[in-house]
View 1 (cartoon, rainbow, N blue to C red):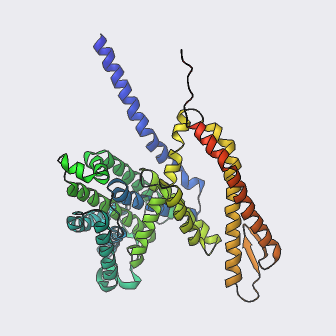
View 2: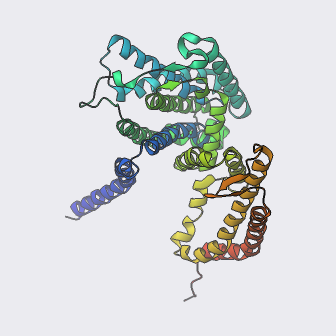
View 3: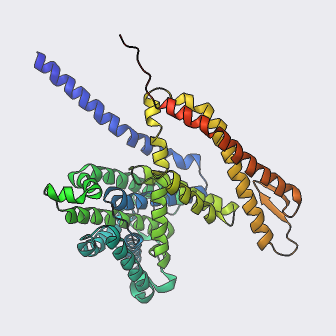
Length: 431
C-alpha cells in the first residue's frame, strides 16, 4: 500500500513538472495565434513575420556563441544559402508544377544550411577563439563575393525572386495573404525554438557549455571539444537555413545583402543585446531590434546611431544583456522584496529617461541643422512640429538632458542602497 502511494505521488509530481515546463510553450503558442487579430494590418503582420524570422536566426546564432563559445562573423551565410535554395525550389515548383506544399520549404533550407555547415565545420571547429572567428569571417566574405560571381545560383546583384503561391495548397489555402503566411512562420518559429531548446538539454548541448567554459577539462574527462563544437555548429547551420527559408517565403526575394558580413554583424548585435548567456535572451534582442528597425527608423534618420549607442551601453554596463537585467531581479523576487525597488526606480529611471530623450532631441536638432535643405526650418520631433532653428527647442532639450541626468546621478546612491537591501535576506533572531 505504501509503495503504491509513493508511486502515485511520484507520477503526480512528474506530471506537474511536465505541465509546468509545457505551460510557457502553450501560452506562447496561443498568444501567437491571437496576435494577428489584435494587430490586423498588413504592415503589422509583416513586422511580426520579420520578428519571428529574426528570433529563429538569433537563437541559431546563440547555439554557437552562447552555448558553444564560438564567435562567428559569418553566420548569415547559412541563412542566406538556405534562403537561396528555397527560392530555387520555389521556382522549380512554378516551372514543373511539383506537388510540394509551401510550409515544407523551410526544411530544404535547413538541410542546405546543414550541408554547408558540415563542410565548413569540418575544418573550422578544430580551433575556437580568435582562429574560429577569423575563419568564419573569411568564409563569410568568400561566399558573399561568390554571390556576385556565381550568377546561376545567387542571381548576381539583383538576387533571386520567386512566387510562393504556386505551391501545393494546404486545406485550400494558397497563401495569397500575409496573414496566412504569418501562421506558417509562427508554427515554424515555435517548432524551431522548441527543438533548439531541447538540443540545449541534450548531452551534446550540456557539453557545449562545458567546452565553452573549460575545454581542457572537458578533454580531460574524455570528451572531444572539437566534435562537440562540430555538432553544435551543424545544428546552428540547420536552424539558420530554416530562418533563411522562412525569409524566402515571406519576402519572395533574396539578394547578396542576406548573407554578407553586415547581416552577420547585425545578428551578433541582436544576440548580445538580448543576452547570450540565457536561452530566451536572443528572443528579447530580436523583438527589440526589429521594433527599433521598423518603428524607430520611420521616426528618425539617425536611428542606427541610437541602436549602436544601446549596444555599446549594453556591453559596457549590462554584459548579460536585457535578459540578464531581468534575471538580476529574481533574487529580490524570491525574497519577496521586489516591491521595495519600485519607488527608487521611479526616482532614478524616469529622470534618466528624460535626460536620454533630451540628449536624443539635441542630436536630432543638430542633424536637422546640418542637413536640412534651404528653407526647410520645421522639424517633427516627438510627434510635435516646430521651428528647428528657434532658441526654445534647443533650450528645452538642453534643460531636459542636463537636468534629467543630474537628478538620476543624485538619486543613484539611494537606488544602490535599496538594491542591496532587496537582495539581502533578513536576519532571523537567534532562538
